[in-house]
Length: 463
Image (cartoon, rainbow, N blue to C red):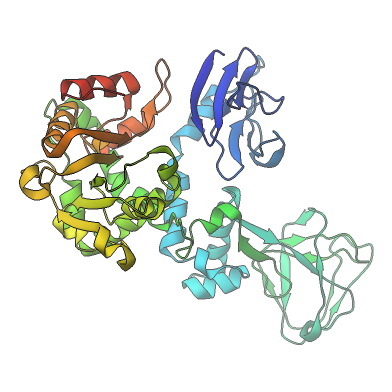
């Protein structure tokens, strides 16, 4: 391969002379198509960019599930329009802000329903609700089922039929209550209207299967479409077990502000940790939102950690920077014989969520990672010091400091276990995530060789 990424869910992104694809653990392509770019699969779906510039969602057979947007324009000499591609990249923040706004307004909890239902439930005007729904539809977060009125039906007792084509007119009429609609065959508009009909701006969608071919689209009171979340959109409902609702709010506000500081941060030579963790801990609302976000990522990403990290009977595992204890709970459920020390800032572990049935096997420990003396807090009893996406929040010097602190509390023969994303050697992949950490926490992502050097300098042998 010209390029080969790390494996995720048993598949990896790979590039040959014809383009990008996904390969299995034997290195075999799982489909025949090649793309300009591909993203990893999540829930059986991956976002790809075709070699004609279209953005699609495909399944693991390489079949197109839907087209996010059509291919970009070309220049007169037949080359892809780089100006257009770069313009698309520049407005990537639109997606984050749309999702953040929808979560903030409670839109995903307002579905299913018509645009007017959503408007009423969210406190918006119907036309603004419809505009937001349309944008979410473009992102693949919601979908609309359209309906039509059968001819000669009184509006008080109408029958709905499924939409089956996409021919649109640029207006629609909304009749008053109890008015009969008389349907006219062969007319471009296919309506003969009774008295007292109020005109609404909207969209009239034509439907096959009735003599008059009339369907009424989004924003019209009678017969309008029913909006519902897609499988991706369900992730933004607050009752979803791995909800990304709080992630949308974080990335749409706090993290956006962090990125705005990036130019100045890149200029500075000062090495100091960002104050985000103590700021989060001291703000009740932010703390709850931030840790709900982390809880969802932990549930999604750590669910099978117990299959890959084994422990001896009675082993003491220190979950360093373990937050409210999601990973601790996963480990306790996977291994009935280990003891866990959950260590994080006192304000955080005071609200841990480890179930009561594990009370005898978990010890919450308030610990300021950089400031506190670890042996006085943890004792010298730890068999495994576990850092799950914690050390990437710190600079190299602070990582070595934390590893040495871990060394002080380990029993002879003890170990540290790191759960981290690895930057691939010789590839640009992960560069944006690395800068995100730098902007938000002062940390960084690292390659495997980088991690090995840090561990060895801190006195550990990498196994």
